[in-house]
Length: 272
Image 1 (spheres, one colour):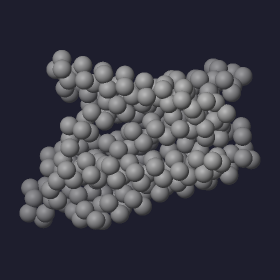
Image 2 (tube, one colour):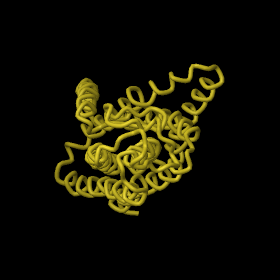
Image 3 (cartoon, one colour):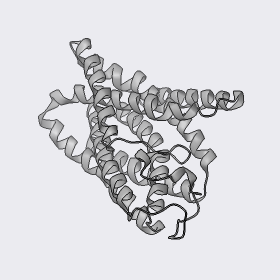
């Protein structure tokens, strides 16, 4: 397949399929499954960052210190964006959304009604969720494109990591939309529309990077920063809420599985 075809395919998988899985899990209240998926996503994100995107960025650069500075600045930028509700990650069992909703109190398979003890906000928090997710998905598309522009293997590994963390995030967002008063159909359609921002970002980045190849290396560093930030800041803190030994063993095993899957995928697909 051509590079553009890879980017389009990965963007659609990252957007549409992650939303489908998230909706299925959310509507069937599979919170335990999502908790397991979060652990796996941590491993996939860290594996992709430290085994693929960061080493590739360092390899493309004549100044490794410049790459690490971009990673540090990227982490700071993502922190600021999260403060602006543009880079948030919300899951069914750990969903603050800046106190806009109380999605963790809402059964996943139940659509809140006007008689619910959770007062609807007339969709305001839902709109903020969609705006933030659209921006986030657009950036994901750019990072996927940058990875594929360097190497198909790198693009596939990056896409796997992004899809893995998108599923629990989309499920949490789905519940927030329901809690904001949206119907299941409207919540799904809004999330679906937002997910296409990944495709738009990927295609635009593909044509942009053809004329500005010098941006590929910093974009890989930013992709590394994104993955590290999401894993360490948004996902790992939620795991500490289950300090039991058996839960910890399960979490560590799934994190290692996520790392191993990235390593195996990288070994299976040879470099271009």
